[in-house]
Length: 249
Length: 159
Image (cartoon, rainbow over all chains, first blue to last red):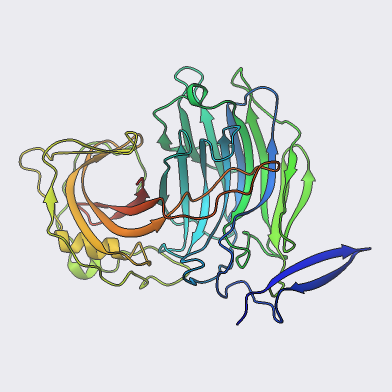
């Protein structure tokens, strides 16, 4: 089967699927071809640093494309809260859940941290249930500067479980700290978490200000950068939902 | 799921192999998914402190008298249920495992070599170049198995 790309344009509310570079489209869950990253979600980019990011994120399924060497040997999709450096490929600390074709179970919690972006540590753990919500929290300690990553009860942020503490203060290495809340996938043949009827909701989004208070800033939309991925804002200060259209690709 | 912040060492009698083989957690893809059994290297016990990454994990020598309740082969069997991709070798290491969320406890750290893990994620950047695609920056996946109970706890990659 030939490689296929497709583009979708919405004109006066009418969606038109335009195959590009091939004669057929491929459903998510077929073979991976693109080995690229895609995002849909929101971020807060203040002129000053934030010191924490947290959100209740609903656990939703994501259809994934299959291994297709040499283009790609795996695929995954995730949803997460993150503190990140200013620079592309810079440091980050994030926690959320992921679907990953290499793991069993495919659906697990994950956390990842990188001081400089050069080296990364990633942990996979637990077995979240579809439909559940969890608060994923990343917080820089005001006293020691280290970033702690938690999974907490949704709605009230209680019963937090600490899963990792960095051994560095991002302000010693990063040029700034931003908060991001995104769905992500690594091949456009794969879905973002969420479907038309079962969207993945991000809610109770908060950022930690320099005084240590959790506040709500107005967020800026990021993505979607591919036609099949979508976002719907419910409140630009702290609530949106993402999903992938059930369109053959 | 075993929660972090373990305290103390409690030896639990060896579980039957049949029970251990059924410890795989629930999965969208089925509990039987596992990597084709890669060549197994002989087990080793840590003799001096080993640090993984930037103190992301620490492996210390077990105290005298602390022995694993499950064998290295059993630990590898359990770890194989965690990872479904290809690997070139499986290396079981017995150690006192600790990190920022776990107090030291006796563990088998089963290292799968020859795997491919790039950064799982990247930061969204609307103005810069595209986020980097997956590359095999990390070629080891470590699966941590409680050496006393056979519980599969988590997996991590750092290099």
